[in-house]
Image (cartoon, rainbow, N blue to C red; front, side, top):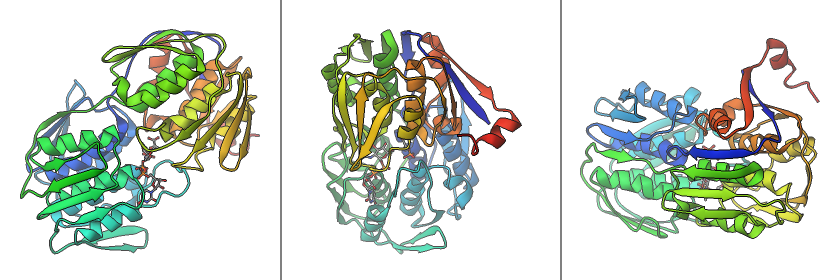
Length: 430
Ligand SMILES: CC(=O)N[C@H]1[C@@H](OP(=O)(O)OP(=O)(O)OC[C@H]2O[C@@H](n3ccc(=O)[nH]c3=O)[C@H](O)[C@@H]2O)O[C@H](CO)[C@@H](O)[C@@H]1O
Ligand SMILES: C=C(OP(=O)(O)O)C(=O)O
């Protein structure tokens, strides 16, 4: 087991390059099942979620070759519809995309219930509603979901909540269904457009992605193709926030600035200077940042995945800021850890109320989930003295080489293997 050690207070300067999007990658890999020949994906991030999905694909018969340039070739021609058991599936939320992809390809699937970051309840009722509308019988037995359809027929599906996962999963099942499918009240996240682009390159007929009505005309089969993944807007946003918190001048490279409009608007309101070009952002911080309120919303609103890192930044803003997560109201586990670091944060009625400016102090803290980890790393960079962060495995789910990238920007941050004694003490330390 490893921990991250940060010596705070050093200014960040230089360029950081963003990898391919985790939340696209985790859907693009299962989508490859739908093709009859090799799918090549360019720019996949080297993170544990991607490695777990590749491993599940191999378990069901895919042949995967990863070449040196972040290219992955997935040959799905030998995949068989065998049950996918709990072990690996439980490591991530996105394993639920195997449901849509296997159902689409084989008309049946059996898969353990997915895991991922615990952000409060993460229901999949809208995914199931969609699969049932397409003609599948879905049962939940002893922690596994069984899906079966004699044939899949296009349908009109209205989502009761705007859901990224349900929109993608229904698209995966519908592209090979007979006839027309309409998804109403669909989500519009860039990752959905990325998945639809891959499916279209494979031969699927999809219209309306990026709007709230997606229309799909089923085709008989899909072919292999080559696809380049979009840059990770959440990884980019994390470094943008780190730069605003502790940067002098930082360039974020390989970013689509339009994907981050809500974050950039809030940072400008706080007084951060941001220059943008086609694929880069230059972040320059002023001394006195102003407080702002944020409310997470579906895209193009403020992303839930950046709420936790942004909270760390707000500790240094002058005045009171209010953070409300309307997507995952319980995504507040980082707050206790930030309080250990001297942050003044109250939680009232599901909102975090942050009083600033406060000088954070180094402490021993634990990352309970992926973006809580990112928020603690940023807090560590801002703090006086040393911060030790455990729960590194969560950070590895979504950030490739985070410590190396920060070292290149001038941060004093490193990873260390924990001693057996430290591992034993993990749950007993105050
Ligand atoms: C809209 C949104 O911001 N989605 C985020 C969500 O995606 P994720 O795919 O996890 O969540 P969804 O977009 O599916 O869910 C959005 C909301 O709908 C609810 N819901 C979802 C499916 C369902 O069947 N029933 C239901 O009630 C969820 O509890 C949540 O409150 O977390 C991901 C990981 O943090 C982010 O990358 C996504 O951007
Ligand atoms: C919580 C996240 O991931 P997941 O939904 O895969 O658990 C995230 O990307 O912030």
